[in-house]
Image (cartoon, rainbow, N blue to C red; front, top):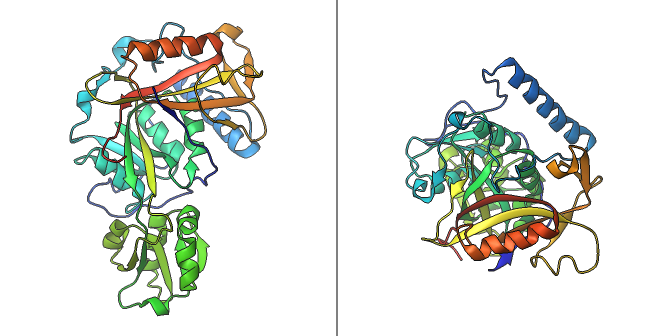
Length: 373
């Protein structure tokens, strides 16, 4: 079994705004207020208060522990309240599915959602957190969110959110990122003085933009940049974004493939409330997160992976075997390995890892996107 991980800092996308698109709901999800029982409201209020506390004071994260009798944690103790588990046959055309993504129309995330489910209703969300909550509260059926980029590395925020929430990875989508230089109709390359885009997009096109002599200004999202240029009818400002954004906002494409490295691919994870039933009829991938006791050689006995230390405080998890008291992990290890949980070898490997791990959670076992290498 091959194991792969990636880690390097990346900037989470910020607040977004909504616009028109044939694939999306015109009312983006911002502040979710579903009708829930009073006891549930208290639980959600506590969870959201903990979330805000972490964002403002950088408190430790509290992932939800697994039940001892299952690698996959259910979202309710009442089995009648849960939908049936997904199977790999659910990966069809996505008809009638509502799929959340982070950003606005024309974002690469929207393209990934439509690639995963071509006939879906793509639903924009202002934040990554909102997309997670929308799935959990049955406002949407799936969420398609970025997890890593071949140049920028891991999207750390979404790794952290996987621990905060009880969602499962049920698929992946690999989306090639091809940046274009966009401008209003009639504007020529020599007219441009500045260019707007997401910080990662600007960094990925640094050599090209420097050669063109353009001043770079960062905004929340590539599609937000395109919309800003179009709506304000700017004549000396361009945007780095997708060809889809150019089409949606009526902009001209002055140059294509601005990225300095042509091998620019973002991997998106597909999230659902229930885990997929693993199979052996196609290539599968399994994603896990775990922690180990400190000591020399412990990683050598596990998988060949990299780790990511938390910024200021160790991650705090409530573990059943710890009598409900918080236990702090100085490092978490995220690993993807090419095998299905239906494979006996994969089960044996995780059983061996579980003997050494102080914390272990299977994030999902799902079909591999073989459309790209």
